[in-house]
Length: 495
Image (cartoon, rainbow, N blue to C red; front, top):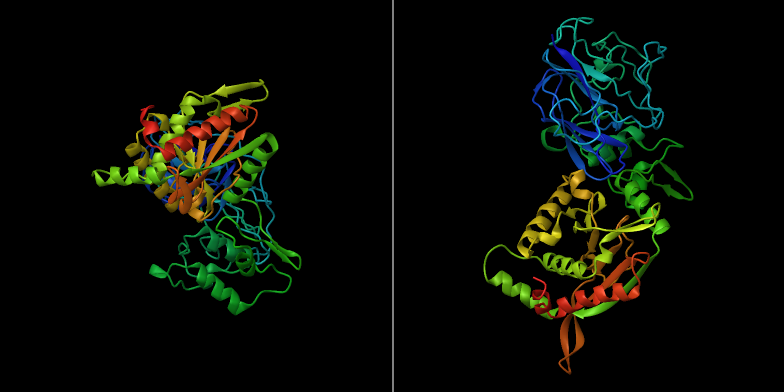
């Protein structure tokens, strides 16, 4: 006899408490294999494909695309064979999934409507216009589905009463004809099937302005509804008095996909700190609050380093990036000054010096600042570092970095020169102890071999946790980095 196992949204790492469903990869009734990705979610750090630890038939999905779910809430249910055993944790199934299945869900946010068998019915049809959103109820298999009739062995767990924001209820596994696929009233006047929208931002803008996406015709490929379509519809309708002008707020604040203004007043526009912007704010605030940092800097002549890189690439083989050479210099410097590759445990009142270098590098993306991590950078040569930087940079650009790609760093290399600036005093990436900053490399007058010449000059800065070392150690680290930049042959001694 088949058993129904409930698969919950796993803990995606490093304190993340929720994720937004971006795209379902399976439908109700699909057969899934163990470890098959079933849903793509977006966290404050990355886009993640979540694999299911069970193999069987999908009997219900919880939450539509664009819905935020807390960690530990149900994602879907799977009917498995008779030998399967139900489990609330990750001990059953493949064991090759993300961490924390079965983690208790945090308190509900923004007043999510919960499923209730005794919910009182209320008039339907105005939940979206009032700023509400449909409950994240399951899309369940009906009486003719793979599990047989309602109440039979293997009935979808938790699919009893489906309650939407309007208060309507249904019998298990059914959707009334006057509801559409998103749980809204009067579906007879609207098209059925999924709304052709991919972007969560487009859904948010429409939801917060009371716009029904089913009434729009998308201008994108295959009728895909784009942000421009939503903006045009809102401009045509005009902003209702007293309602926030989401579009104006987005332009005025320069908001990204993770920054959706919800209130505009005469004093300015309020942008909620959530998603990746909220995660960055929390981390940087904690760093400033806990770490007594200091910064030192030095100008260096990078002419010889650029010439050495050009010679390497002219010799053939995979191209070596400048960032990879700087990373190799960093790992050599950390071997000489291990104090800077450490973290501070104030509860134990100990400095923990780490035996490996997981090198993070700051990358600006359309979603905001992320810090991918090159694992075991101290064991890699320049060619391996170049390949890994290229892989992680492309993943950051496309939004496919995994939580593992973004966690566990021990030292950060920050190339802010790409923004056309010379210097900076960056905030340390907590709980690390130091960050090397690299400015732009530009021609400048420089005294070279006793004569004034035009050389390629770069400013290097080191921001460090003053608890792990004093200025002498920090200065020694930075001076060694500058020496390697000016005379790459210095690096050969440590290879």
